[in-house]
Length: 65
Image (cartoon, rainbow, N blue to C red):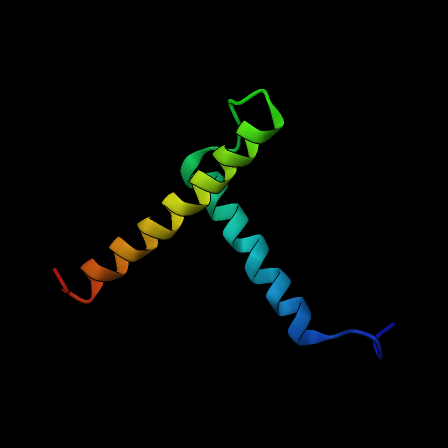
């Protein structure tokens, strides 16, 4: 099993899991929508808000405003 282990691929998975964890902590882990398509929209919206939050954070850190 150690021979088949791809460290780079595992590192990418670790990054993805970390982003999911941050999104859940910042914006809540509950989905209020009932229908499947609206659930997808809500999840996508949380991802977009997360990206905007990161963008604004880095703008403030580097004093771009």
